[in-house]
Image (cartoon, rainbow, N blue to C red; front, side):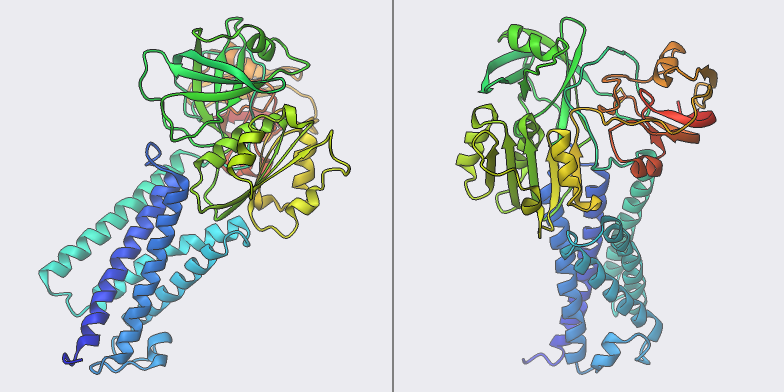
Amino acid sequence: MNEPHIWWYITRASALIAWALMTLSVVWGILLSTRVMRRIDNPAWLQDLHRYLGGMTLVMVALHMVTLMLDGWLQFSLAETLVPFATDFKALPVALGILAFYLLVAVQGSSLMMNRLPRRFWKGLHYSSYAALVLVSMHAGWTGTDVSAWWYRVLAIVLISVATISVIVRIITSTRTPSRPAIAAATKKPVVTSSATTPVATRPTSRTMVVARVEPAAEGVLSIRLLPLGGGQLPVWQPGAHITLHLPSGLERQYSLCGDPAERTHFDIAVLKTANSEGGSEWIHSSMSPGMTLEVTGPLNHFELEPASEYLFIAGGIGITPIKAMIESLPERRQWKLMYAGRSQATMAFRDELVERYPERVVTYASDEATQPLDIYAAVAGSTAQVYCCGPESLMSAVASFVPAERMHCERFVPLVRESRAPAEDITVNCRKSKKSFVVPAEGNILESLEQNGLPVLGSCRKGVCGSCEVRVVEGHPVHLDSVMDDAEKEKLRIMYPCVSRAEGTQLTLDI
Ligand code: FES
């Protein structure tokens, strides 16, 4: 090379690019975790972009370090480049940069192995990217050759401001909105109406929709398309979401959306006619026809598809509906497999379509043809994929017995049978925001008492599966009897589902 200090220029340029990429990566990660771009995002490509930015940051940092050693001016040795305080040249700021490099390696490495690591450990490690960005900013501001140049100062102000604002948004968002855990629940439950609002969950919007299509999807299953009355775009929804149909009888029924989340002009659902129908699926199968209008609320989502590099979907019967939407949302290169079981091929909605579109990825099991019982262990053994399961309780319990909790995500159709271990006694419920207090008798129901006292809370399934009655707990010890999400998550989020849950002790304070 003719330019004697080409390495010096490269080391400076790569450092600046690494700083900018790292800031972008952190900002993108914040957008991903807070979902502030929910209206346009897609978890898969957002995750990919975040990861690419992180990977490119590391490449630029490596280039910065290598060219620092190649450059003749500073003559950094390998030890001075990799070991904090090994150099006499601006020892502390250089050490900060080296520490940031190791944090970056840990964050990137753990992201590559995220499917093999406990979710909480991975998340904890991931948070150190904030520390790495602070260290990099200090390193850049302290050691940069160009720190006195106006353009460098402008760049530094922009990068630090963007990062600071993003972190503030992240902090505010995380204190306001409890993140939805993935182990969650609920579709398709008989319900009684409530018109109140809930302070914790986002209140689902209601709209009039027209039944555009009703056609068989399988034996005993109808595929239904709903269009907004008057046309227009529907709200953005993520796979795993469900809507609530308000039937003419006054009943409400919740159904998972099973179409492509990218299609915003209609909602697709599939409804199984249940043998023990309380009037919902029976009415839909016997009376619903194109041209009818219905009130529809939602979508709401308690079964979100978290970003991951590999998925294993397991569906039983009508449990295919949310899983199908998940599959529709994934980019072509995403690794996934579906194991789909049913009573017979004829009863398995979307079976033929899925097998035809994804012959390499879809395995089906029809029990009326099988000579062996379904081997759940064989399906999950050796897999490190995130497992999303929806179907009968027996199927989900079997899958959960082989899959670590941090990789297991399921959606329930029916509530778990849970007995309260707390003694049956009167509970004084204090409502912090409304400043109301009342006693819920030992045999009473907290949700009903909230409603009777005029408090703004939704109630839909009233069986502890749909999640609509969620309230935040300020003080007291809830006894969780719902099936919406696992108890540890509820404790972490300090929430409860008062349609079925009780409390230990005689006092409970709710944030309502
Ligand atoms: S009303 Fe459905 S969980 Fe409480």
